[in-house]
Length: 224
Image (tube, rainbow, N blue to C red; front, side, top):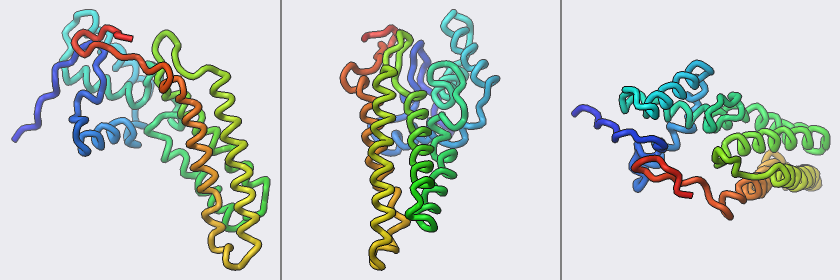
């Protein structure tokens, strides 16, 4: 059978409306559409064309629903706020661009488990990248809602203060006993996991306390 037609497009439509979010497969397909590394192929021209398509539709000019949904997907992937993000700071680029950092941390844990400089550098690089991705993909409205500079700075510093001591302590502890040496390669993981949790919770605190912008699905008008 032919693929189903997309639902009618409306101003302010969200990409998730293309998928059945009540099912696991629908949620998986939505997250893949936003986070797939294939989104790294979108550049300035694609974002400019997507913005122009949606602006033309909003102005009443004829644009097909398929073109508008495609434009919405391009922006959700590469330019959540309308401006193209650098590849390492896109949601679709986080895992791929962070792979060298993770490889460096694991290599340091295996071959230099007590080298404080390497551990500190790896954790700093990882948390800096994560903070950049979280900030650029935060839920902010045109009025500038979202985490303040103070919250961002506090979450970033808190993540570093959490990750570095755990990673350094885990590396040194693994060398004190032959039984613990095989676990040296895992030393960065608890540090990264706890720091990422704390950093993301702080960075997204405004989303939890004040919410995110919500629009009427019928006409795209903001509801609060």
